Length: 273
Ligand SMILES: O=P(O)(O)O[C@H]1O[C@H](CO)[C@@H](O)[C@H]1O
Ligand SMILES: O=c1cc[nH]c(=O)[nH]1
Image (cartoon, rainbow, N blue to C red; front, side, top):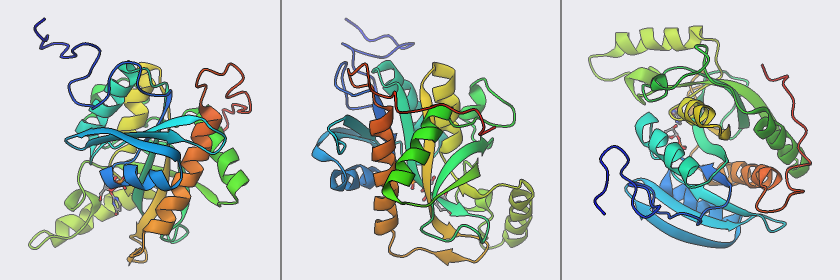
């Protein structure tokens, strides 16, 4: 049968993600970087890659305790992230957790700090097409609670933050380019004025698109850089692994993976705002 332009799925398979119907567990981690999918093999058992198409690389593995977890890279920015979240939702994923990097804006978040995003301030064009709070989407309370429990259990300090999701890495994040130094400085003033803790490029889209589709979502982010102190984390691997351990442990708590008792350890809270 010919593929529909309006709805270009074929035999239960989406047009972008390399996965078919019934192949994914209900909880999926969402790194931006496809290489972080492979890094997840170090914190998951029985890890295998399902495939890669464009920036979308997908693998699955088992968390400590046996829960099966998926990992799917979103690529950089809103458009590819929207595609990933929409196609994962239709493939049956019910919870997504961005596992990303960010640039911290305040000295209280040195490079390597593991953070849970509570809110994302709007800045992504893709997210603007979805309904939601004009002040920006928030993490699902159950996901935030799972992240807190997971971090406590692993003894990883977890800093709760707000981020601005920006569709630009250079001028949009106030990085000076030749001939555009003043524009970059003015942009940096605007970003500082938002009263947020970090800058990155996908969280708003993950939370907004997932929220609109009834998928639970959150984000655990590790500071790769600090714009207040101008520090950059050269050996990024240990921090990424700490973040992935927290994410996998939270994903296991959130997974219902066919077990009706699963997820009952999560007590929801609305205190995150
Ligand atoms: O660490 P990841 O998830 O790739 O995300 C961050 O890194 C990329 C920029 O280098 C952007 O995608 C930003 O959000
Ligand atoms: O400064 C940074 C670091 C990571 N990701 C971003 O988008 N910005």
